[in-house]
Image (cartoon, rainbow, N blue to C red; front, side, top):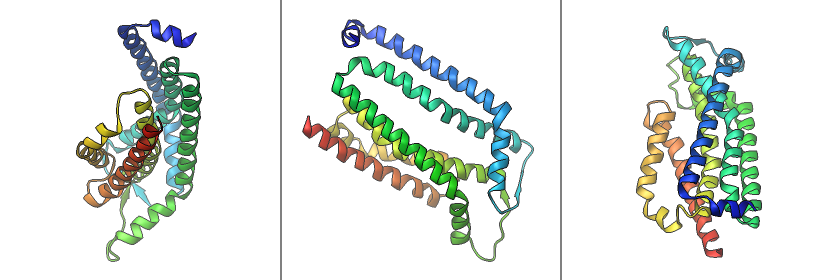
Amino acid sequence: MARRRADRLSFLDHLEDLRRKVLWVLGFFAAAFLAAYFGLSQRVVEVMVRRIDLPLYYLSVFEPFFTRFRVSAALAAGASLPFLLVQGARFVLPGLHRKERVSFVGITSLFVALVVALGVLLYRYSPLLLSYFLKTFAAPAVGFHLSIASVISFYLMLLLGDALIVLMPLVVFLLLKLGLISPRGLKASRKVIFAVILIVAAVITPPDPFTMLIVAVPLYLIFECALLLLRVVDRGR
């Protein structure tokens, strides 16, 4: 029934349905952001600071505001992810066959579970990772004078990298299922995709090329793995 209803909808109807769902997701994100900013963000900042055995400082007048703003945005994004997936499923599932729906739900659930599991592991061991970076790459004669913003950026970089690494194959797989991309097209766009990955890595990391490459190289390797998976799936089709 849902399949027949999807067939009856015109292209403009699909666009209107997509626009409505995007607005719902944006509204949910805005509400979650306000709730996080006025409710949870300050507590989250205090919890993250207590887990680090180093003195932290605010280095500017606006840093407390922007720190809470970034933490609130991250919390809102995490809270909005399930709602986004539900709305995406409501948009995609009516156009899929029964077996494709089962595959979609199963693969989506698997990748979401991986994101949550990796996020928990990163949160659990993030102080060790922070200590490793500080002690391994810093000169022994130079002391640490860290700002709270730099530590928050470190946490957010880990979580965002986790989400991108795990969700990239899922997004690529779904775009293939929808017929919007093909392995041949992705292979021809390697240079453009690598440039986009470098830009994303430069935005989410501190302003130094070494850290940018630490994020960009694993992302590109994940893209190559996703491309290999697409070839296997496309050959099976």
